[in-house]
Image (cartoon, rainbow, N blue to C red):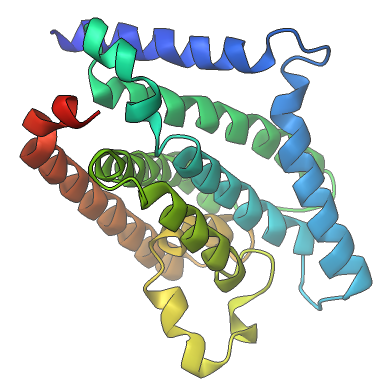
Length: 254
C-alpha cells in the first residue's frame, strides 16, 4: 500500500477516534480541555497554595511538565492494547498496524496541544517567555511526538506476545509519575536518587519544555534537545526493529 493511502487511513482513524470519544456528549470537545485543566488546577492548588513550594513561576513550571506528561501517559496507556482491540479491523481491512498507533498518538496530541496553548495564552498575560526558547518548541514537540509514538509502537507490539505488558506499563507509569520532577523541582530529589531521573526517557523528552518555557538557557536547552532527539531516535529504531522482527507472527498472535 502507498504512503498516501496509509496517511489517508491514519487521518481517518484519528478523526474516528475523536468523534467516537465525544459522541452523545453535551460538552463535546470541551472534554479535551477539561481533564488537563483540572489536573493543572489541582496540582497548582496543592503544591503552590497548600504545600507552598517555593518555586519561581510555578504555573509555567507546571505547564511545561505536567501537560506533556499527561500526553505521554495517555498515549501509552490508551494505545498499548490497540492491536488486540482492533484485531478484526487489522485482519479484515488494509490497515497497517502502525497507522493505528499513529492515529491514537495524533488523537492524544490534539488533546494535549489545545489545553497547552490555552494555558500558555492565559499565562502570557502575567509571564514573559524568551523568544528563542519559544522558537525551539516546534522541534521539541516533534521529538516528543516521535518518542511517544515509538514507545507506544514498541509496547503495543510487545503486548501481542506478552499480555502482561499493559499491566506492567501502567504500574511503571504510576511509579514514574512521582519520580519524575514535573510538579516539583529536580533539586528536591536527594543525590542518591538522581539516577532515576537520569535514566528516565520520559523526563528526557519533557525536559526541553521546562528549559524553553521556565528557565531558559540556550546551551542547556540545546543539550536537552539533543538528548531528547537521541531518546526519540533510539526508541524509533528499537520499535521499528522489533516490529520488523515480529511482524510475520503478529497477525497470528492477535
